[in-house]
Length: 227
Image (cartoon, rainbow, N blue to C red; front, side):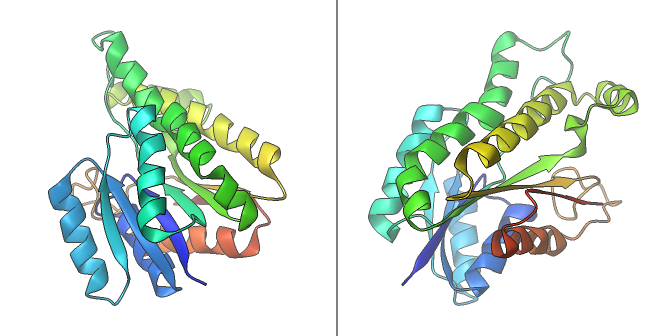
């Protein structure tokens, strides 16, 4: 029986590594992002490694599109066994300059669209004892030094979204257990090959993907850190 994972927010770095890790374990991979060109490159790279993959364009700041893309992926690839949520926005970095719409879009990607995706895939996830796997970042931690860093580096919107996402993951984990596993990897540092990597990143994307695979397989702890 084929298994399918949705990788939401596909790009270089963590999402690509997760797609490869699950693909090598036998999963078919549905890549979701706004950029058709990026998706085409991703599908080609995965297929070159004999991983079955398909591309689905969607703007994940729109919960309606997030919900609808689940149906499109399911109709083409079959029931959904796992969701890897790697989507994020770094907008609204300076809270005093940001528009309310910027912050709202950042929060929708982190929470509302994630929830819409889970709701749309829930019948499959329950039936197949599936997983929801969420990437998060250290800016979401409640610590005055981290708050100071988020302000200094114009990452306030991301910090707010990460904090809200962390709470949502915890609530979903309690709500859906034991039928559906919900887990989160919080990345405490810069990941190689991502937009934040200016040459000093130390975390390998494959190491993050391996943490997700471990959570998915063991279905014990719902939270892990790396970095």
